[in-house]
Amino acid sequence: MKGPPVNLRNQGFIFLVDVIFKVYKMRTWPHLVADGGATVLQATAPELLPELVLGDLDSARPEVLQSYRDRGVEVRDLSHDQDTTDLEKCLNTAQKDFACKRIFVAGTFAGVQGRFDHTLGALNALCKAEVQGINAALLSDDSCCILLPKGRHCLTAPRQSCCGLVPLGGPVRVTTSGLCWDMKDAVLEWGGLVSTSNGLDEAGDGLVWVDTDGTVLWTCNNVP
Image (cartoon, rainbow, N blue to C red; front, side, top):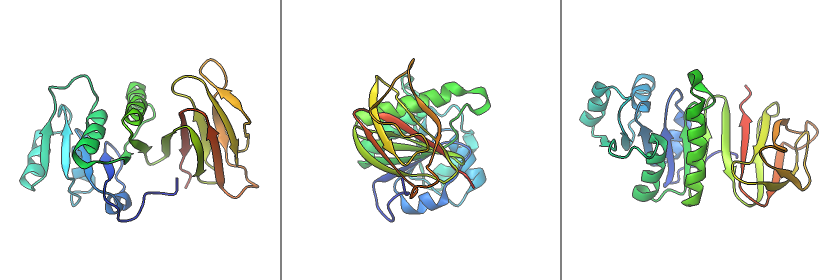
């Protein structure tokens, strides 16, 4: 991924918690805030107004929600739906209300404060979104992950980044080039081989090519 398209509509952006990407805010539309992300957004970047705040609204402070209402932001209470996470509610709304097919999700995902279940929920949301035809990327201050569907993909990552290719469903067959430890027709599956703690080939051009016969999760961390 080289970043989002510039000045294109229908490239959705969802704020979750602990991170604000102002550059993505300028280059994407619409902008949705998931529940408690509203409190963080107001505290961190009060000048940024999303199009919509939504979720079951059990985390955002009432005064924060009212502040956004007073400034013309729609606040949508979806607490009647307890079968989906706030992230899933945002992804579904971005597609149904704004026809988004590519969505950048800003948040903190990897075992935050012991809540690894939230990370698993976010990955499951990616899988459900893919079934609906949505290509969503999870972005945080220190990492990025995105599902790669069947086919050939060209990726970039910081030179010193740790990378991984992990199946989230059944076995997938993967061939790569540009990694320290490339694979050729390798079968990735739980209980077998998964590619973690990999990295970019220092002698390469910085591009990673991935051929996969099924959906696989690409992860990399951001290195200053």
